[in-house]
Image 1 (cartoon, rainbow, N blue to C red):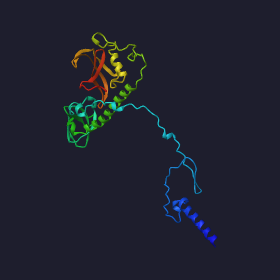
Image 2 (cartoon, rainbow, N blue to C red; image 1 turned 120 degrees about the vertical axis):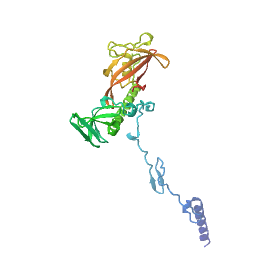
Image 3 (cartoon, rainbow, N blue to C red; image 1 turned 180 degrees about the horizontal axis):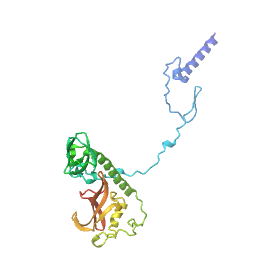
Length: 302
């Protein structure tokens, strides 16, 4: 009986020792238990196999890089350096519709007011909302005809027709094209690669850009200037097509910016919102270098 008692004491002591020192806190029977830890929903798994209570947890393989993850390094031209050319508004170009170039006519317009048209045998009235052909314009007044071939004539203010709306739509497209053209020329100038030691000013005529006394640009037999042809070929001026130049003047020495400057007047055909037009421009050179190329208004050519 005594032996059984000591056996129970020994077993009890062993159980208490195991329960306190070796049992997991959440599996204790006698001593204070603690909550079983919660495993995160997306645990960070190790790179090796871990065994726990007979469960085997295999680490997730690292995602493999795909072709979509790789992006090439492409040099980008700093487009924020591009300064769009200043383009006058339609009102400024037409001086508030008082100077509309002949290239804008004839044009079919919608009348916003009644107009009386006259001919040798009498007169008739075109009602508001009707269409008529605008033939010419003078000081903001359109000369109109009922049809393209009719001899009858009438007059109406430009603003009393849809003529301005038509021109505004053309102006938007033309302005966008002009800015795009200037930007492409700017990019061409930025990206142009020149070979070391090669004279890029040498043109198809076999001559380079040369100057005479006092830095006067030399004129070619056909009237052109290699200085200006080189400016065009380099993309610095994109509005002038050498084949559309109507006149190259001789250089005239003038004082500009307080300095003696050679000025060459260039008249050329350009595409405008009113169609092809003859445009006057002025190229300037000083000290054996190109300075600027501007319109009559002083705005630089794109």
